[in-house]
Length: 113
Image 1 (cartoon, helix red, strand yellow):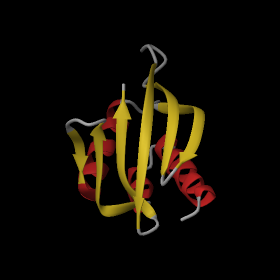
Image 2 (spheres, one colour; image 1 turned 135 degrees about the vertical axis):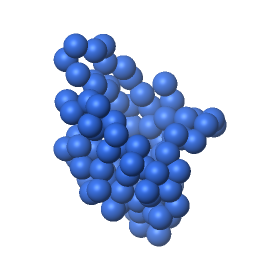
Image 3 (cartoon, helix red, strand yellow; image 1 turned 60 degrees about the horizontal axis):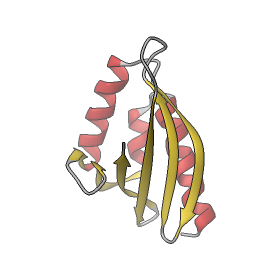
Image 4 (cartoon, helix red, strand yellow; image 1 turned 120 degrees about the vertical axis):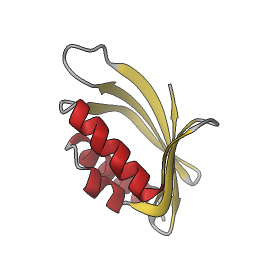
């Protein structure tokens, strides 16, 4: 994949995240995709783990939204700087997300908070 292809894929992934579309989100991931803390614990394991985890989060926080403040294609990865808001009543937080790819899909996302 080219850098532009990787950026476009992550843009599509983020659009589905912000639409609360867990099914559409995981369509863009490999079967064994993982979401994890940077160099730490796995948060969601496999496409089904990601789907169920996101579905639960979207149900709990229906106004959840991530605004991308910056995005970079670096080497074979994409890095986003995001500001995430769960609801108007809650304080937003910043996160760096690092995306890895395999077979034209997202294979791993690691979060730095």
